[in-house]
Amino acid sequence: MEKLISMLLDALADQGFDKDASLDVIDDLIARYTKGGWDFQRKTHLTSD
Image (cartoon, helix red, strand yellow):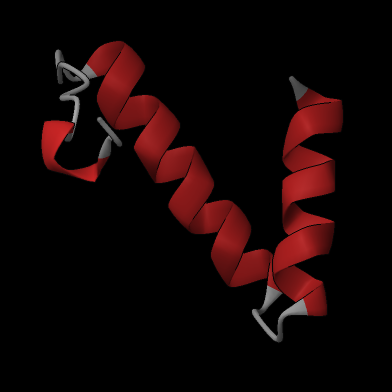
């Protein structure tokens, strides 16, 4: 998981995003989905037919 997050942070930094701020957002999302009881919702309008 750490390697994936590191790769994601590097890609975001390459696009001009701040790594520390991005890590905070990623950590928050992980916490919400794993501890907060959030359910992942598919966005069917984004799928191609």
